[in-house]
Length: 191
Image (cartoon, rainbow, N blue to C red; front, side, top):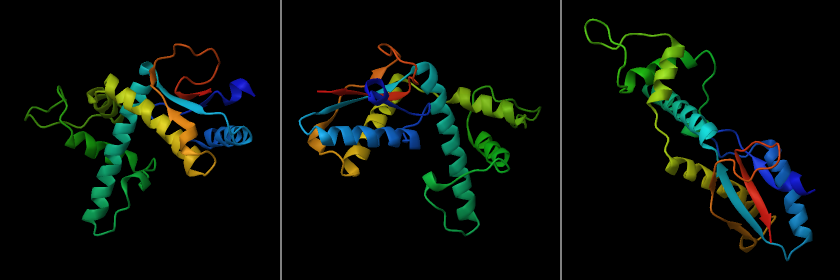
């Protein structure tokens, strides 16, 4: 059904497939399996206005998970891989403060002794997010990671032969989007 299968959406700043995206890919894979002569062009897309903030939030989340991983190791526990570490709402202020203390931030508020002073969590988070820099190269890498995630899913599930799925040049911005779907996506073209 044309527009329904023309793209899959991603959360801002992320390249992981959600359940809704996998469902769309299942439908697309069935359609392509029924038509073995067709090939699929996969083009990742990143939108600077949305994905910059998403990537900054992802950086902060990774920094907090790193602090938790270090804490687990310091306690003598076996630390799981970073992508498996979760921080719940009760732990968040603790690890946010640790990241804040460990990060060099120009203009970080200091007390009269020159030591970084404690600030409210919301201010810490804002200062940290503002300190992260996300350039166009990072956006392009995100768009390519999204396209690769889609190709890996299609090929890895055994649905489509690798020679039928091609990753093409990524797009930055919303130019060419005519539907109401999220602009943080991977677009498909059938040939």
